[in-house]
Structures are given as structure tokens and as C-alpha cells.
Length: 258
Image (cartoon, rainbow, N blue to C red; front, side):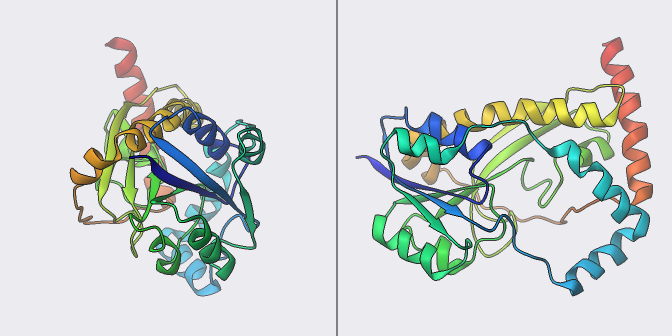
């Protein structure tokens, strides 16, 4: 039986385009629509921003802005062009959590919704497909919920990062785990290069991971595992960042010796 899939993204140029292109070659699924949000991310309230700054400190916040560019990518594949080439309907909505999104999901009636490059998705949206929505998290769960990829494993002196595809629920990175893989960290002398190169390795696996999950959806869904995270990660304080820098240099030297 063919699985009906809708892909939803707030960033149509990049990872979503590469994933959609790969999924067009999975015979077990039917791509019923591409939903594109015109709003990239939901705005944070001033209260939440101040709470985060209080938690990580002013230096941590400023450093977080500085390192943000390390997590970017250079992929230029446009999901809208991929959809057009394969006759997949494209629906543009003002934002993810709106009436237009709900209406589009009801109209095209996917079995599963796929989220790539979105912010928080409300229950009024992720509950429309009868098998729900799934999301890619660029870290291992339940170990690193909410984490900026790569940096927190290095903080704890570990040599592997990874990625997880999980169901979306009302929490952040708390839904059932459907697909999970570890990836060796590609240590470099500079932390920025370690992050960039390792993230590139993870992104290269993203399309195949989604394809493998959806091609054998029933088996993965039946084997899904619940998770309970003991902590939630965010931008490091400046002191934590200095430890990450030190560990990166140490682990790079050790990787060279090994």
C-alpha cells in the first residue's frame, strides 16, 4: 500500500529541496503536496529572549550570535522547482501554524507529514495526518534535545554526534524515535571547522535517512520508542564554550594520534 506524504518547510531552498528530490525516487510513497511557509521562524517573545539571556549570560548570548553562521549550509536545491518538475502541488501559506496549513493538509490528506526546516508546529497542524508528523533533529535523542549539533557531545568529551527522526508531539524533540544514527565527529584544529565538516556529513545522510524511513514506514512505526529527556540544551554559556574549545583541540590531537 502506497504511503501518502506531504512535505512542509519554512526554507524551500536547501535541505528540503534535496530531501524532496530524493523522495521522488522512493516507489513506496506518493508525494501529495509541498507546503511552503512564507515565515521562516516564529518570533520569540521578549520575555523568552530575556530568560535565555539570563540563563546563558550576556557573553554567552553574544558568542551564540557569533557562532550561528558555523551551522549554515550551501545547498541551493529549491524544493519548489523539484515539486514543479515532478507535478507535485505547491501550497504557499503565510506561516506554519495557520488555517491555510490545516486546510491544505485536509485537502491533500497525507498519511504522514514531513517537517524540514520549520520552527514549532502546533498540535492543530501535526494531528491532521492520521499518522502524524515527523521531524529531523540534528543530534542523538534522547541524549541531546534542543541541542545545537556537535558542540554538546564535544562538551562532554565524546567523539560521536548523530541525528534522529522522531514523531512531533507537543514538546520540543520529545516525540517517539523512529530512526536514529550515530556519526563520527570530524575533528579539526578549529572548532568552527569541526562543526562545519561534521554537519556536512550529517546533512549528506539526511535524504537517505528519510527515504529509508518512509520506504519501510510500517516497520519503523511499529518499532518506535518513547523517550524521556532529563535535560534540555541551548546555546552554551561563555564558560561552557571555552570548555568546548579545549575539548575540541584535545580530541583533535587524539584523533591524529589514533
